[in-house]
Image 1 (cartoon, one colour):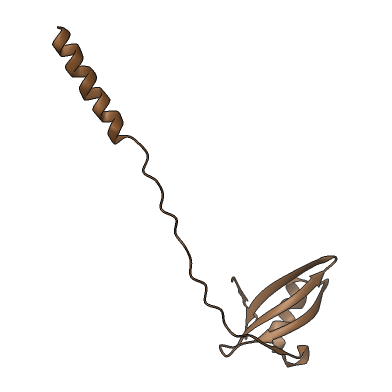
Image 2 (image 1 turned 180 degrees about the vertical axis):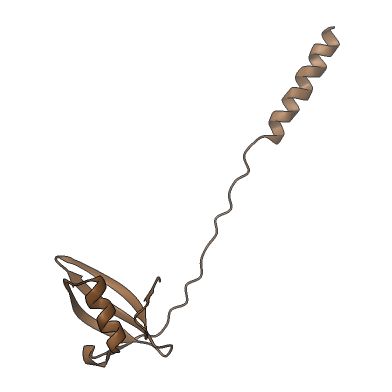
Length: 96
């Protein structure tokens, strides 16, 4: 009887060794920096201007930038907060 209890304890103890959580590997994202060049706000496509007025009606456009992929980086101020938003030529917002 004593051997059965010891064997049972060993078997049950070995199950807990397999139940230990596996460490999660740290995944990294690679972000490619695209060369944005400053442009005049008047050079923005109308779709981008309309999207800015629609989504951020109280925003002030501080600076505008464009890259070769026709993506636009907009530095805006809303109240006392500054933010940077990105849009494509059709006025769709891009998450960067």
